[in-house]
Image (cartoon, rainbow, N blue to C red; front, side):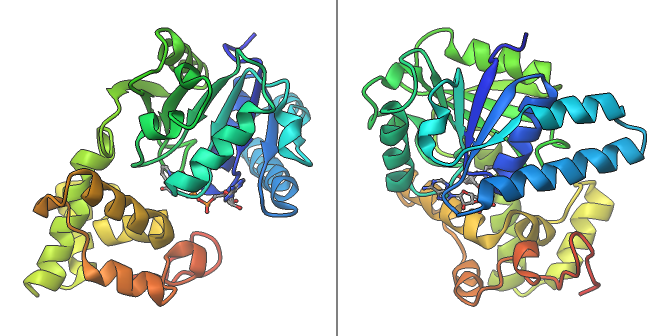
Length: 294
Ligand code: NAI
């Protein structure tokens, strides 16, 4: 029996879809909810295709695939999350929208249901403050793509009850992730430390005109050993996600200069150059994952 037998995931886009996959592979029943009509069903179909692909490569048995598929239920409304032991939110990175969702969730779930947010940069404490029971709220911050990025930050808000993060960490180990315990601070560990990766790269390209972005990517990927260069990472994450994260961290650090977002990202966001999801970002992207040379 998994640590959480029934898990709800609210927002089943890039991150939520991966979280659903992990929870189902750990043996949990998973209820998927998305505000986009047809979004939950589409995510179930996409995951089915992912598992079929893993079976075709011999990385999952046909029985395991059938069992995992049977654990997924697309929700017609948020009320379908009523019997969940844990609900993980992975919706848009906007404090007010997240707070509203948590308030709504509390009208639906049991009193002992744990509520977790996959926020990249917002305060877990501020999200929890909207709740009648802030002690059941924690941060559960995954990385993209979830099945491959094996770390998850488990974040205690200022009022999170003792024991909640321990359960979330135990659940993470069940699907093969390594939990990192953090307290609630802007960007937690990875986005705080990792911010410099993007801001310095932008400083080299935009501030100093010292190199082209594709060369910065090549240097940091091929020479320094990062899996992706900073501009490749921006394309993977999507500017619609990373730009609000940068703005939020800058605000939370009271305008500290080293966290100042570059105007270039805002301009490219406004232009719709979001990254892979839009087909074009710093690079042109063909059908899923096929990157054309810059
Ligand atoms: P996404 O845009 O791929 O998915 C978000 C999903 O939430 C969409 O399917 C959308 O229809 C749905 N949604 C939006 N508002 C909703 C609402 N009020 N109720 C229900 N569903 C709603 O975004 P992505 O990349 O999955 O990011 C989601 C969250 O995860 C954000 O908080 C982001 O900061 C965080 N995150 C993103 C990472 C990334 O690299 N993309 C990494 C780690 C965290």
